Length: 220
Image (cartoon, rainbow, N blue to C red; front, side, top):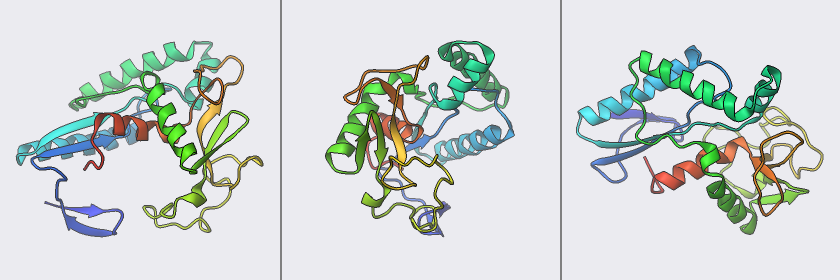
């Protein structure tokens, strides 16, 4: 089987890390609204890929997360006059209903972000200790200049990435492209205790924590 390798920009033969097992992680939905056609396309593609791998003899371990705490969830909950937890649970149920209607099999493991806060905190602590992240008054940011391979997968350099294109410009950050790993708690928002004070995880760190929790690194 040959597939496109985003890193090398080439079509290459697929080689499992530890055959006959294939360990597969797919970022799941942020549950603040109903699923749309883009969600359907993504999960149909990976469901088909998983089924094909199983068909040709691989044992597939498939992990797909549910992002159940996020800015979008909080904003939607405030707009609807709901608790963020209630809102995320509602749209999680709707998501599974839609996927079942499309004939998509659920993943072997479907972890939720809110169930893995401690895993996330431990990774953030490690990144700070190794000099890849820094704390600014309770907000923790990843320093993109400390990772030489940053942008390699997307084919971009730091110079190519415009300030504020993907993240809000914040004068407290060392670099405009630095992104939040941990966000300081704001009034009336969900929060957890951490070494940096009360807060919640940033969007980018969540899948890193859950993939490492359930799949041996490196995984396929």
